[in-house]
Amino acid sequence: MASLHVLVDDPQDPRSKEVALDFPREWIEFADPEDPKHLVRADLTWLLSRWTCVFGKACHGIIAGRAADGCCSHGAFFTDADDENRVKVAVKRLTPETWQHYRRGFKNYTEMDSIDGTSPARRTATQGEEGPCVFLNDADFAGGGGCALHAQALRDGVHPLEYKPDVCWQLPVRREQEWTKRPDGTKVLVSTLTEFDRRGWGSGGHDLDWWCTSSPRRTWAPRRCTCRTSRS
Image 1: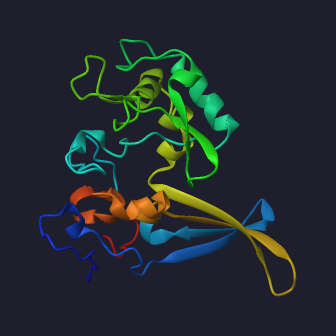
Image 2 (image 1 turned 45 degrees about the vertical axis):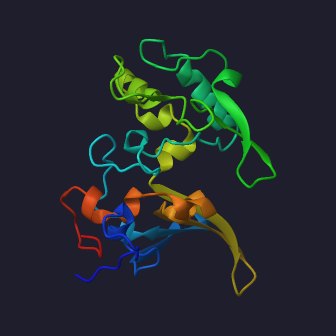
């Protein structure tokens, strides 16, 4: 099946195998059976793909030379107070033995920053000015490498989404919601479920050294699928 790739000057560049952002996709649209004013648009090409996270195995990382960071090279912005409170509860379960960069107190493991350059927003702190997220343990850490919150969730027998910031567990799926006015004057809430591609990071997403969702040849492990997609 034909494929589209991002054009780069260096064939060794990890981006050379990435598909174009706007290649043809298959979509399905249906009304929410529990809410007639809610319409769901789902990207079948992405949701039925064989993508799988390869952190610590084949991941190049989003910053050149820092594959061990994965996509944790920056702090994670919180979506709202509920997101912050859920992480607060989860962090209380961590100890110096399970969290390499252990810190006590919400304000000590979070920092104020800005997503758009003007509005203040809180995110997880980093390991120094240019370091990765404070919750990222080194690969050789005795308590286990990778995200300390993710690992704690697995130890506790719960899904990582219960402990991690929203943006962390939502990746690689992106949900967008928008109220749309129809020709008859009625309004419907449209929820779009699709790939969290480079654009999901904002303008800086195009500068990432590599992004896994766009690189099927290097990141997608085979699994049984009910249909073929353009990325199968």
